[in-house]
Image 1 (cartoon, chains in turn red, green):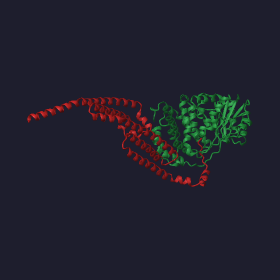
Image 2: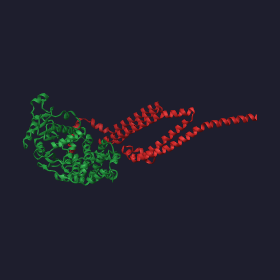
Image 3: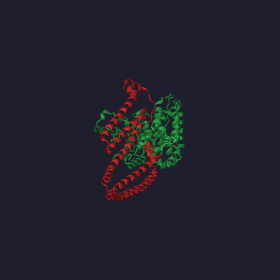
Length: 234
Length: 398
């Protein structure tokens, strides 16, 4: 009896040790891959940081209209944000390479599916970036045009337009990421429609007097034209 | 091939009879020059609407405008620039000694005007004749606030209307303008570049007193695009001629022809509330853009200005000059999109107009001249600031 127990114990220990020995190369590969990726990430981040600093990236970003990017950046520096993001990406890539070193089938599948998903993430990021640039440009155009037309709700109009474009860009990015496409579609429709309705109401109520005046008729217009305006610009 | 001594281009739709009268007045100049005038085929002349018939019956010294003048509806400022290009091209084809362009309204196309502009070209060998109009105090504001004093400060010529729009131009100058236009691939703005080109190439420039000009009424909804259309080419020329204007140290008066005319000036008050309101809106909503263009000291001054009550609204000349210089610099550095930049300048320009309206409230013609002279001197005094910022935009930022 005791002999059988001893034999079973020896066999299970042997099996465990064999399994553990099988895992060791993969674990070592994972540790090495992560260590190398950390070092590589650190070096690349330092190079990128130096490059962006020499390009005065932070100032340029502000000039291009990305004021808010500084607010959610570490130490209010978009340069640090970009360099750290690149370092994190390299470490994640190293970790995935390390995971793939285990010959187990599920790790390979996991790594493959994650690698397959990377183009979607990059595409969504690009969509967000382009959307953000377009939103800034259009909202600034609207703001300047509205101020020059003496519209008191110029800021509101500009912010509304920016959010319209950003909501569109976020919806497109989420669609690209294949995250709950049905819900995104519905939410986008509701949000987009809501912003348009809110803007229409705000502008409509804000310019009530203007519309009343313009509908008042030609008699008033004719009398207004009789008031001689002395300013001649060119 | 037909040749001519002088080419006359009148933008307004004149009938042939009036056009021939203008040409006849020019033929009395020294040496009886051969004058060719550009004729609008669709001018108010019902008997000659058919172009073939018109061609047969018209004077041999009238030729139609090139199609580019009338086919491009565009905006008035761009139309004038296109018309200038057309006149230059025709003048070159006809081997003309000079050309004259009357771009003001139809009331201004009088024989006296064209004679005054053409005489220094044909008899005194000048290269550019700019008009000196008899002005009321609120006329030509964009010119008085920026274009004229800036041209005087940068290029050293004290000319009141560097962008005309009615000008006399010699062959030497229009050939240069055509060459510059061709090398720019047709993207140039002829009208803004004429005076800088003449000044930087040491050509002979003079002024002619031409009397009262009828100005087009203000379209307040379009004022922003007007400012952008005028100032964009002016700022581009600053960039192009930077080596020239950085060498120019002071300004000199240019010879003047004709009799100066002073108009009686209204002394009543005008409503500036709309313009001040626009400035207040700018202060409230355009801060994020002005922060990128203007230095902190200027922004502080503007905030102080915004707190002033309407009756005390005054913009110091030095402040206005720095604003113009900083916008010119931002245009050169492309600090923000150029359309946005020029669009955001409109509330500041309207603030200057409002302050100017206060300053000239009770001034007569002499008082108006003094105020404009003080502004021009402020531009010249501020030139070292412009040069420092132009050369070292990052290092010199007060």
